[in-house]
Image (cartoon, rainbow, N blue to C red; front, side, top):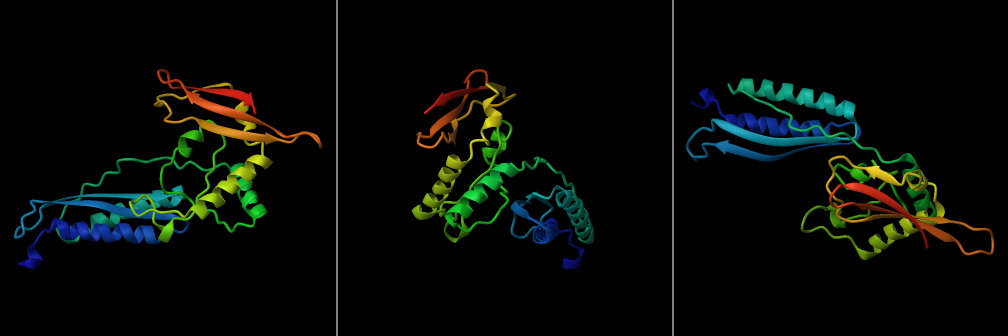
Length: 239
């Protein structure tokens, strides 16, 4: 009879809905995604006896994330028991949240205001190269709109106008703020432990104003990684 079945897939469906509810109930910014379900034995007329489920949760609110994972584990266990199904839940990874520099955020927002560009602060759920650059220097990011809000997919598209707007913001901020780069300028050598060689050079340009009547000059701080040692070197040059 249907009521006597110990259906692992039905229990897993309850878990999928529980993951979604937690993400929708995040007070600040949180997402919860179930990405994969594998059912065994997979025969059309056999009650699923085992299901492997992969899901993840992300948030800038570490307090909520901690409590949400606990609530989720408890709810999944309780729902599964109602179907006579056992649960083995394991959290495989716990990445640290890396905040952007407040000074960089203020610089970017100031540039946007100066250009009359509407903006809003947004957290990023994805892991960017900026996470690693934050170990070397103040970090911040500028996001521009993707059509229909879709990104990281084949349909992703950003209009050239929006790309140009973001570029103008960065260029204006570079003209106005030299101090953001300065803390890293004085350190000529860094060691990145266990890091793979950087795929590309990171170039930070600071514009400095000279006395009235003189042309401004620029100091570029170039970060390069030694291919064999992973050591990151900084070099100054005037442009």
